[in-house]
Amino acid sequence: MALRLLLVESDSWGLKMDVPLRTRFLEMKQNGCESVFPQVILLSLADSDKMKAEYAVDSVITKPLKASTLAACLFQSLGISITQANNEKKHHGPDSLYGLLLGKNILVVDDNKVNLRVAAGTLKKYGAKVECVESGKDALELLQVPHKFDLCLMDIQMPERAIEAKAHDQKDNADNSEAGSAAKKAQWHLPVLAMTADVIQATHEECTKYGMDGYVSKPFEEKQLFKAVQKFLGPSTSS
Image (cartoon, rainbow, N blue to C red; front, side):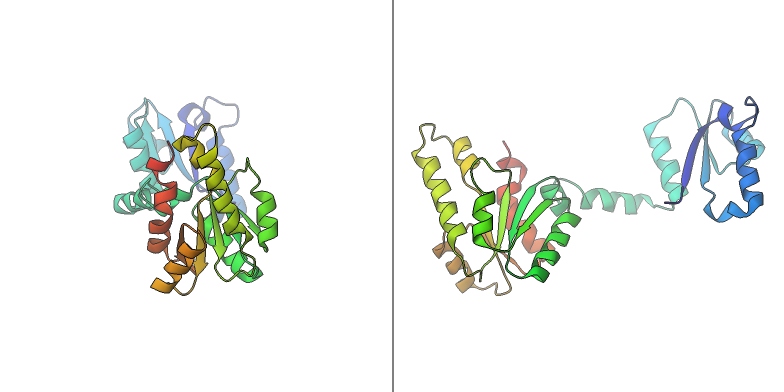
């Protein structure tokens, strides 16, 4: 990966070294490496305009560093506008799909390998840790308590229904346990959402019939997926 930015202290860039770093970079340019030459941001105590001209760098930040100054300089050097940066922050915030799925362990069950690959790729894009299996039997083995998963997504047309029964068993065990607290129930009961291309009322009724907690469209649609998983993975459910 090409180096895009270099933050360097003025003494390292200047003349106090036996072979100044600036000299080495100039030699690289002369040897035809200019296309991969990074922008140089100098950290200095001296006047920024004077140092920029004297040391032939792209930008100078005076020390001590301030976060706002550094951020503005980086945005400018990378060609990122403040609006773009704010949009990126919003996309990755706690109220975004990325914020919900980041670091979550999700089990995906589908007997179609292509569907598995597409679903896993989408979930990983939002920061989730994904494990895929092609049968309810394999899913049950992974869901033996204690398991690591926060959510299970399963194709609604899977021929095996054992996983839904497992979800019921987990909930019943929690209800009948000696410590029947809300925290205990949350530990035992894994939310199971159906993946379906037929998002209609009949689908909702079928999910309820089999004891599933809801459904998501297939292929995933960001707003609908967010709405479906928010009640299970949102901040209020993590305490």
